Image (cartoon, each protein chain N blue to C red):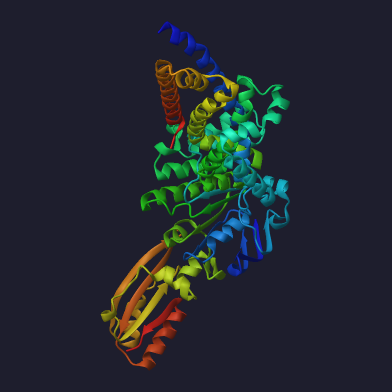
Length: 331
Length: 216
C-alpha cells in the first residue's frame, strides 16, 4: 500500500542544514495499522507529512497504491491527496462551520450532488456517534468530539489511507482510548490502512500491528509490534518499552535479570523450574503481563544469588525456553 | 433649528453617498490585494516573492502620502475616471485610493490570523488554492474582516471631511464653510453631533455583526 524508499528530508535555514530524516525505508501493507514512534525531534512528524507532501521530501520515493507521490504535479497530487486523508493533533477543524459542514467540506471541494453530500455526511455522523451535534460548532465540542469530527471529515472522501499526525496527543487517556477504538473499528470495517505517528507507547500497544521506531532521523527498528515488544534490540526502543518499569537503585544488587516472555513461553512455570533445576533462590523484583494486540507479553525482573557460571547456564536455559533474558546488574 | 436641519440633511446624504460607495469599492479592491499579500508569501499557498515585494512597496508608498496631498496629486487621474475633479462623485476617487491600501493591510492581518493548521488540513484534502481562499481563509477570517471594514468605514468618514473641503461636499464641508468660515458655531456643533452619532452607530453595528459571526 505504502512503500517508502531511501527517503530523506533536510531542512535548510540560511546556511544551516538539519537532516530530519535519513535514508528511511518502510513498507505498509494494506489493512495495516502502522505505528511510527519516536521522541520529539526524531523526525516522525516530517515523515508522515512527506507521505502526503505537506512537506517536500529532499530525496527518495514514496509509492502509495503504486503511484510515486514525490514526482506528482500539483493537479495529480491534489487528486492523490483525496485518497489519503489526514487527522491532526489540534484537529484543525473550520471554526466558522458546523460539525455537519466540516464533515461535508471535502465533498464540497468536488462537484457532487447536494443529496449525495447530505447522505454521506449523515452516514459519517452516525459512524462517529455525533448525530446530535450536527449543528454545533467546533468550539462547543470536547477534544474527543473534535477528533471524531476530524475522523469523519477524513473519511468523507473514502480514502485508502488514513494518516494520523499525533491524533491523540492532545487528549486524555480515556478519550485517547475511545478514539483508538474508533480507529480500530474503521480499520476492520472499511479495511482502511492507517499510519499513526505518536510518542505514546500505549497507542502503539493498543492498536498497531506493526511498528517502526524512529530516532535521530533513522528507522532504528521495525517489525511486528509483538516482536519488537518482546525482544527490543535497540536502546531507544528499550527506553519506550521499559520506561514504566523504574526500579529504585537500592533494589539493584546481586544478579538482576530482565526476562521477557512471549506467546510461546508465558504459560511455562519458568521460575519454579529454575529454582528446582539449578537449586537457586529467585527473588522477584518487579513484574507484569501486558496484552499487545490481544497477545501476552510478560516482563519480569528477578534477582538470583548465584555464581557467574551457574548464571550463564540459567540464561542459556531461559533462552532455550523462549524467554529472553538480559542481565542488567552483576552481583 | 429648522434652518440647521435643512442644511444638515443634504450634507448628510452627500457624506453617506461618498462614504458607502467608497467603502464598497475599497472592499472590492482591498480584499483581493490583502489576500494576495498573504498568499503570495514565501511559505503560503501561492508563493510569489516578487509580486509580494512590489505590492507591499506600492501599498507603503500610497499610505505614506498625506490624504490632502494625495487628493491634489491624483487630480488628473480623477478627471480621467469621473470626468470632473469637483463634487461628491469626484471625491470618491481619492477616498478609494487612500483607503484601499489601508484596508489591504487590515485584510492581511485578518487572513494571517487564520490558523495555519486549518489551511494545511485543506491542502491535505486536495483543495485548490482558490478553494482555500474562498472556502477557508475568507470564512474563517470573516468576523475579523467585518471589524476591519468597520474601522475602514469610520476612517473614510474622517477622510471624507477633508475631501469635502476641496469641493466634495458632505458634513465636513458644511462644518468647514458654515462653522469655521462663517463663525456659525451652532452649525459646527450640530455637524459634530451628527458625525458622532454616525460613527457610534456604525461601530456598534460592526461589533454586533462581528460578534454574531464569530463562532470561536
